[in-house]
Every structure is written in structure tokens, then in C-alpha cells.
Image 1 (tube, rainbow, N blue to C red):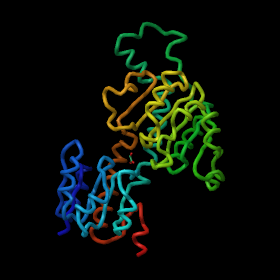
Image 2: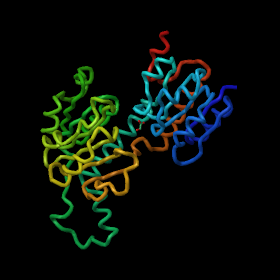
Image 3: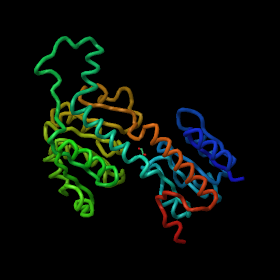
Image 4: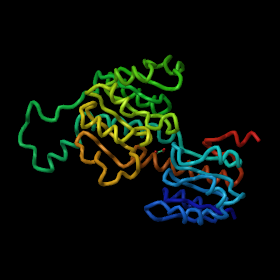
Amino acid sequence: MARTFVSREIFPEYIEKIEEETDAEVWKDELPPPRDTLLEKVRGIDGLLCLLTDGIDGELMDAAGRQLRVISQIAVGYNNIDIPEATRRGIPVGYTPEALTQTTADATLALMLTAGRRVTESERAVRAGKWRTWHPLHYLGQDLYGATLGIIGMGRIGLEVAKRGLGFDMKILYYDIAPREDLEADYPLTFVDLDTLLRESDFVSLHTVLDESTHHLISDDAFSKMKSNAVLVNAARGPIVDPAALHRALTGGQIAAAGLDVTDPEPIPMDDPLLTLDNCVIVPHIASASVATRREMSRISATNLLNGVRGERLLTCVNPEVYDR
Ligand code: GLV
């Protein structure tokens, strides 16, 4: 029987499937296995189901051994995995792209509304007994309706955020490595350069991958171009934003607010100065966390794992070139 390691609990019906078909070990702790433990647990396995909190590199693939046939990640992002290294070894890497697109786009709108309309700040005030009257000048925020939404990264999630923005009568600008003429044929989206997007957008929403080209893409220079009423939303990866520059922008009035589903590092340390700011909404990387979506992500990642150990093609593979050999 093939051996597998599952680095965290997923929906139980899919754990059962994995246990029926393989000799599986499931890491049941809430927190990720420490590095040394992970290196030990993967020794001799045929398949690994992992999370974005697990560092999957050449050292780990060596520790697993040459029989390792599949790495199945339960996430759409895979910056924690050394993909070229997996590809070099002919190991397919699974991920869960389509499953979470809509849910993540919903969460992005939630952050835009929450940060823009000061929902968490004013809710905290209610609980602290500070709701003393209706006041014409209290808790004034930013409208989504009619505002300009700048989307950085017009992929699957970016497009779904744009469609939701159109429902709020927003004007949609986007920036990516190339214009998406295929999408512009169907939706009123305007491709602009990054500077134009930053200068003209009331909401700036990040939907790019994290790599060398996007690391600290939003830094002091970017904030200096943004509108003072602008709201920045990041439901992509924390390191796309320079956190010190974000703090300066939020305290210096360079932008109005930020909504973060992701931080750098994660979890955000309790002494991080961003946690002291009322105009910074921070939630713990929950953009794909709906019941239905996490169930579907469990199904896809379990299927990818089992297909991989059987030597069958994965449903969704980051590096399908491994099949060309
Ligand atoms: C979550 O961040 C994911 O990449 O799925």
C-alpha cells in the first residue's frame, strides 16, 4: 500500500478516502508540524498533502526519497513550494485553483466594505460603550458605489472581484503583465500602467502571485502615488505589501484605510504596530474559508493526492510539463 502524509486535518470524508486507499498519517495538531518533524514524517512516503504553511523544498523532497510521486497542496497559491525543484524531479504538484475563486472574491469585497466603511472600528466602539448618539460627522468612510477600483493581477480572482465591483457601479482599472483583451471583450475593464492605477483608484485590490517581481510591489513609492481617500485590500500574499510602508501610509494620511487577509509574517505578531491602527482591518487569512469551498478544496486536494500515488494525472496541476516526459 502506498504511504501518504497529510500535514493537517481536512474534511473527514476525504481523510477517510485517503485512509481507505493508502497507509496514511495525518498531522492532527492545530499548528503546522515543525520543520524537523515534517522532514521525519515524509521519509519514505509516496504522496504528500500539504498546506501553504509547510515549506516544501529540495531538502524535503530529498528527505522523502525518490519514490515521492505527488505533492498535493490545499491552496491556490504555492509560493511555499519549490516548483522548479519538483519539476526537475518529475513530481507533479497539485493545487486547488477554481474551487476558491468566488469565495475569495466575496471576501475581498467584504474587506473593501469593512475597511472602507469602518465596520470593525465602529463595532469595537459600540462594544466599548462609545455609541452615544447619531452624529453627522462620525465614522465617515469611503463609498464603493461609483468609485474607481484598481485591480492588480487580472487572473481568476481579479476578474471575479471586478464583476462584483461592476455590481456596485465601480469603474474598473487593472494592471497585469499584459492586457487581457479576451476579458475586455466581455467586461468594461481598462488596462492601465501601475502608476496610473495607483493614482486614479479609490480602492486598490491585490490579486497577483507572490514572486520576486511582486515582493513589496506596494511600498513607500506606491503609497506616495495613491489617493488620500484610497483603501488598499490584500487577499493575495502578505509580502506583496511592505508592512512598514503600509504603517507609514496609514498613520501619515497617505491612504485612508487597509483591509488585510494576509500579513508578513503570518500570523502577525501581537506587537506589530499595524494592530494598533483603527484604519487597518486584519483577518487571519480566511478568504477561502467558507464551508462549501473548504469542502471542495479538501475533495480536490485528496483526489490529486490519490491520483498522484496511483500514477494518474492530477485534476489540477501546477507543473503539467512533468507529463510531457
Ligand atoms: C490561500 O491563500 C490559497 O492560496 O489558497
